[in-house]
Image (cartoon, rainbow, N blue to C red; front, side, top):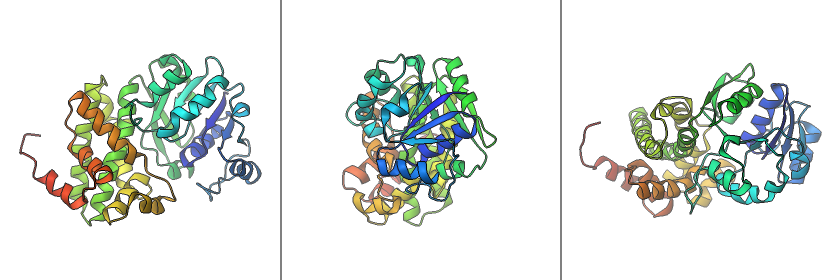
Length: 332
């Protein structure tokens, strides 16, 4: 049994707290807002994100970061990627020595183009072999409901990955290990952008042929970027790559897909938040940082470019479809 601190009480953070508790660990869930932490502690439910999911009574909820982190052997960072650095700056002095630091946030930081593991290492001073990432086809609600799913725990230290694997294995979630942190993080960040594109296509009334084409060609450009950055190409054919991409691009539960559909129907970024309960999808910010990173390393990512153009450069979805279909012909 491990003492696990889950730092962030959104839908995925809350779901992972449930997973670790169901696996027999001592779990503390940190919420930024005191009122939310009190509600979770009192009612054993997260009324803001998973109001109809009963949480194990063994989960302790708090808004006190020091209390959440005290004595933790596994610390799960479950905050949005663009706020990761600021949160880590506050938490770094409180982190227990040698705790495994597990990121479940999927994004590339704006400005620096850094992956989450790099930010964690830079801000906390932790060595990379202490930092793990979790990625896979894991729509929060389905996992919270106990529907069978699989995920990937990636860490350069395989023994540490195996320890986290054992700590989060339940009857409904089957974790696999991987040492390719780069591939898992690039997959997790980029799939959100492709899901925005799929949502935009769905919002235009386009069908399964379009969706399949976007997923397949999206995987191709994700693989190009990942391998250029040193990832193992096999990662992109697995759960963290194709698995997560299919789930996020296909499901109406996907925040990025839903957000893309709203944008496609003419909503502004602010208006599209209404479709995702006031939250901006991770892929919106990441489309810019990933597009800029791709340019920096010389990788062609036309779908990502199109999503960036819609989200940040004022282009219409229709214009981007025309541009994509008019690209020069080439072999697959």
